Length: 200
Image 1 (cartoon, rainbow, N blue to C red):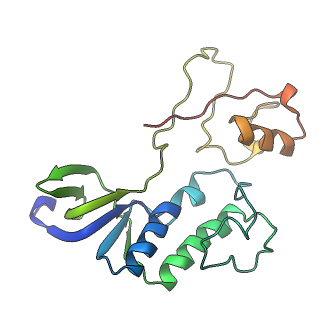
Image 2: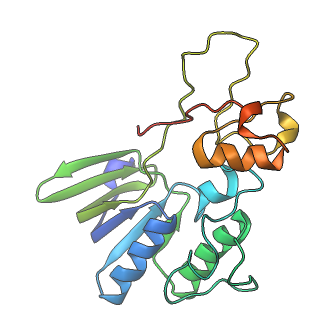
């Protein structure tokens, strides 16, 4: 029996269980809208495994949170580290019993009649409405303008900490570049920034 023979129907399908997907699910649940969230890995997976070790939220804990849930054990003025952010989203989702199905990637999404059909390794899901909450940057892109093999290029989703870098190298750009340069004790004049991705 193949995936096509296993068809599940739902009013609204949400793809992705990061910040946007979890928030969308919470709002739909409040309104009594039947829905399902599919997440390819774990809740807030990009925060867990596809970011550098020292990443923190962009704003203080009192600001970078959902209106109805505070960060536990973090000073409101502090910047939550990535592990705390991922845990916050997971706790928020589980405490509200949000219908999130993890480990289920959506491999195809098509128009189907008046709605949509999502294909997954576990089967097909048909929904009247779909919210794609996967974020804008899905495919890491390394700039092709640098051809010197002696220059190391590393995408931000593979960067973890300075120990893996050659001396003087700082991946990223804009605000992220300056953050990493500051942690390495280097000012902008001693670093090089490259764009690290673009919308797929």
